[in-house]
Length: 146
Image 1 (cartoon, rainbow, N blue to C red):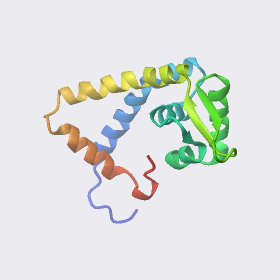
Image 2: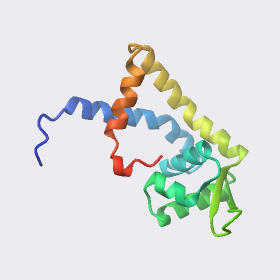
Image 3: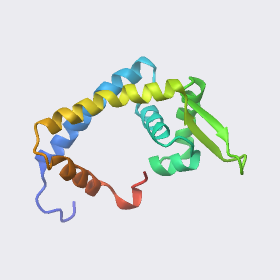
Image 4: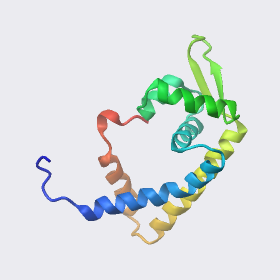
């Protein structure tokens, strides 16, 4: 098991329950469209970075081309993402959210944003920076992406 010192089961459990609840609202919206969390991640990052390439998205999400292909095809076929050949390199594919894609990204983010704001209302003013630093510290630096 390695030498991890004291295992903080309480924080592990709080992270688990926070994540479960954090994704529950978007999961319900996605389920109505027969989409899952992979669709959510793609819509989110394409909406936040319009014009990103497929290669950029693969790097951000740290997934295989094969994993992305099915999800991206469904989002394109459903009218949420638009794919354009790159101006210099026609093989390069740039991704843009459609109007429906932007609306979906916002609909998924709104309940999460409300949940975040509700949590910060009960916390001291310094909590936002502390949480940001904590979450940044939890990330694997070599897998950071985005």
